[in-house]
Amino acid sequence: MIPTSALQALPRAATSVLLWQPCRKNPQPLLTAQFLHQELPVRLTQTLKIVNASDVPFGMSNLPTFRRISENLLDDIARLSRTPRPMCQVQEVSFTEQLQELQHRQEINNQSIGHGLQELLDISKKSIDLNDKRLKLFFDKYYTMALGTRTILSEHLSLHEHERSTVEKVSPLDVAKKAAFDARRVCATHYGLKAPEVEIISKNTSVSPLYIEEYLHRSLFEILKNSFKATAETHRNSTRLPPVKIVIVAGGEDVTIKVSDVGGGIPMSKIDNLWGYTYSEPSENGSFLAGKNTNYGMDIPLAGFGPGLSVARLISRYFGGDLNVVSMDGYGTDAYLHIFRQQSCLENVPEYEDTEILFEPEEPMQVAALGSA
Image 1 (cartoon, rainbow, N blue to C red):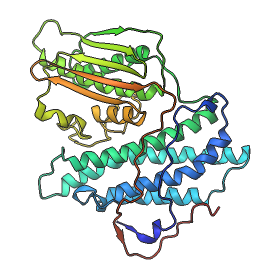
Image 2: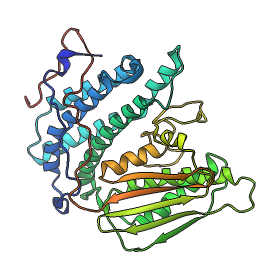
Image 3: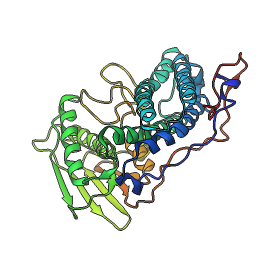
Image 4: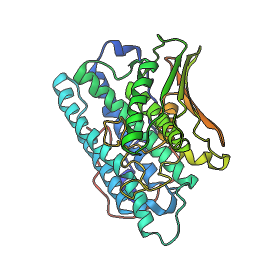
């Protein structure tokens, strides 16, 4: 729990950002810095509320890791609220240096959030269901807000350092090839399995929706990794593995990428488990942690955002799309990744204006009121 006084002056609702803004053709780092000066304390406050909400399951908010994350968030909010609004290029450069440090601290928070779950497993006297819907909901909320914060931070840093946006026209075909290559490597090195071949069918090779390439790569990587692993395990004794097929189609509103495998399928009773943020079996270090050990020794985008299809669906929904899975138990699985093509897409971030927070009466903490600088 956190002190009541620590949140008295904090804002209540985040601003949904138009993801594909026309002004990106004319980078203006000062304007984005001014927006972040106002918006970041709001985002961090919402994250603080999520971590300390009364509906966080199994009392995880009281665990040392969660309290440490809360303290880090309060510290970051205080730092931002003490920083003057940048009004010139010199101030923008100084503020950007602060944002680089903030981004690093947020990455540490994201990677350590699963430690709280491990603490719970270590100290709990009762068996914890890792597929508990409340756990999934908590991680959905936390990682969606973390993804939104990461996106607007990365956008400004890219404009400042490279004079270009992170949002750009991407080739789903090229990204699919790269994701398949990386997923095959993981299948061989991490799981010790020979990966199946990939067949790609693209009805329109020139289609190039606006997106963030590393996010699309991570989504496809997770889908393909699952398909490769299922296919290799199901046909372990076969001389030739059936291929995994990728179909890319551009519609009027969406670009849809279908990944099909003949990996044995998933029983209906197990489908919901696909959307969890914990491993179904311990990783090589014996951990069930979400957000840990997800880079497989490679430079995988968004390492720390949890394993499996859950993060792929989270990314697609954040950008106005979706991820659906249709499986035939005993045969195979089709995954449909939908990319929203329109340029009027608002980011999908949680709203928690009325979230009930667990407070505890303590001596007031010194947190500057926002907007007082």
